[in-house]
Picture: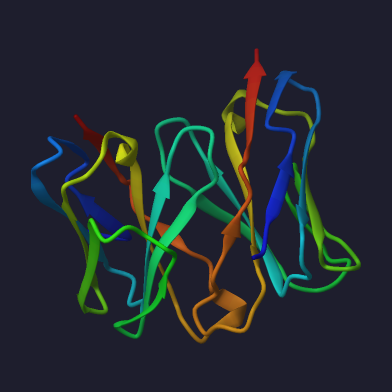
Length: 113
Length: 115
């Protein structure tokens, strides 16, 4: 079945440093979504990428979808303590009406002030 | 109430108990999901209901039994659970047949402990 691998598992940064998490799928994806889960919270949708090579920005966050639609990355510029949490990628292979997602294991980000 | 709500938020049960988790979405969505989140594991999809029909059952043990009486409500009935079933159970909803807007909205989860 489809597998989605995400690295690194943990990332500790000083406030102001940059952060990147990478996501790789074993199969070509129809789209990829990113979610953030704050400590003690639940996953919250951040963005969806659909097109090959797509790049989207949300303030300090930059999301990329690979040309082959099998990998993706999330980059945060100048981290802040509010960025703390677990970042998940979730891939959809398509073929269903409801958007079945396979989640990566997440990257836990801690930011030291 | 807005978004996706789940009750109870915390549940402790013995292995012989029967309990139910409830999820309600107020977003007008027509697909609902149950996920299991254990420590150091990815979110595991358990069940999917689309247009009130169960469309996914990812090899979940029969001690977990879902029910979707209408597009707004989803239940997970639990019986004779094992300690390894202790986890955060998350409900989510999305709009089926809308590829451009099929992001999932999660509820706060039920933290389940099986003794």
